[in-house]
Length: 446
Image (cartoon, rainbow, N blue to C red):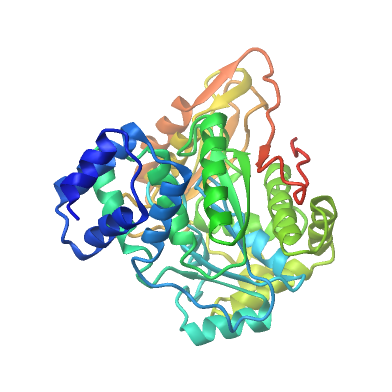
């Protein structure tokens, strides 16, 4: 088998066989296929696409290129939630303890943030002492005893994807639907979960900018999950505005704890309850409507907050920060960003909001960059809110006040204000699949 023939076949619109795809991914993994040929095939896939069968084969080959987890020692149904990334997206910190409070197991491995999107692991490390690395034995023991654990991806999961993405990033082939789906699901399927809920973000703060593109990606990933024998459903959620009011690691942990206490922002709480409802429903706890009510009950009676405290304590974190968020150390400096005009905030560039937080030190441009865990933004006004000239629309936080100017410029330029109040948009656009009789497809919106 020759790589030349595989490239030519796809260039001409042919359908690659399972063996040809395995040959390609094996060669990417062991380095036997040169970068120029890998890039050539990625470009051919970008233009010619792949069938669902090809994309599934590609995903499974990526999955099998590295380590795979064995959760067979975990008792009970295992459910995971994966987000395609957004701004202010701290849903895992709420959803995981909610779901675990009903005996459903959440054995979660999360990534770090890069660029304008935050990472769950970074947020957790804002809790003093919290360990995001556990041995396999300790990880499984904690999931069995408490119901969930969240750690970083310390193993070599899907190494083929890492090489593929590096080349896609410099050859303008990142936004290829089959390559995106194989990248996300290849890593996700390396974990041994029974059910997967995908939170596919759409809008200015997400990778997929349109609802239709997000639907197409969601359908493809759901097909892959089902072909892998996993119960899989996807929610298309709104990222044309930050989720909640907090952007930045410690600030987002505080907002998550407030939500677990029943005092969270309406939009963030709504998305969390919907995600938790679908996770519980896939695990057999009832219809989605019933499970959303269960999730709300876990907030109301404090059981979800107690699960979160148990996990923080088990992973070495300072529980006093969760018991009273005022114990978090505040950054040295704060700065009020004030509106330059009156009217209604009609739209924001959510990605630019994320970049403003990055400029304050809350994120990283490269994986080696250090994070200022206290840095970030608290929004005072969001899309749909009225504002007067000179009124504060956000507060910036940092331990280096020289960073305020760039962040303020980004924030103001990303905020559009007009005379008339804009129409409300849904938080959850749709559910995929919407033709599955086992899934309640009620639309949830504000």
